[in-house]
Image (cartoon, rainbow, N blue to C red; front, side, top):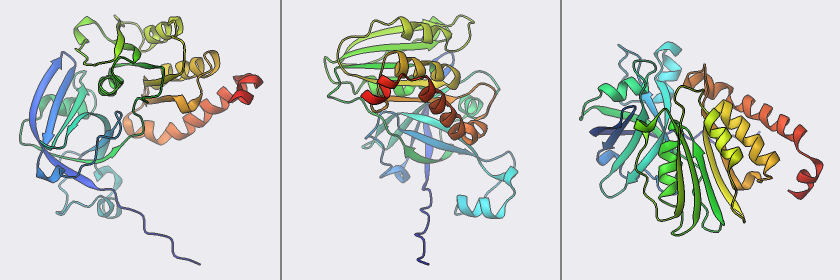
Length: 288
């Protein structure tokens, strides 16, 4: 029996917090830098993400840090907690990585950490991953999501070709959470305020009511898994958007932490695909 190739070890990146800025009441921006980020490799995609590593309180890992050794030798409750976050921007010359964190008080791990972290603190993370960037050949672009998708939407909007039509729908808690978005596209940006309603309700309604421009769309739709499921069905079944023109996924899910959501996400995606296949008219299946 031939030997299987060795599994590639995930590269653990290290950097230090250089700057911290609260850009809205519930959004904190961290700039992480350092010479160890040389060759980090982000830039191809606008939905690049990293997986931040948070040691449990009181746990100190041996140096050099080796995630495989930690998982082999230590009990699971001492493994680092992993939280995935979008790369808001990457400056390869300055070796600076910018990440935006949604912060809603003391709940969770990453948000409270971002609220209290000081410049100089070391940060460890895996990545980058990613798969989406706006296609230049698309006739128009749709970007839609909640706060968790806002960093990727902002980064993507900066890469939509100059003059290209874009429809941007962002749902946030209220007007105080709006940000200035830079673009050279012909963009219509709509901020949707929940004002206490369930996450995604306002966004789903806005996408359903949107007057789609003519031509081929390239769409990016991300956020809480419940509304993402609704919008995926709408775009695939009602609007007939093929999967190869749609980047759509749940970044998070009500009632699940990041580990729980990642563990169940593959099965959740399979169920969504099965339901969608059952609902799709035969004509759609043949056309695609």
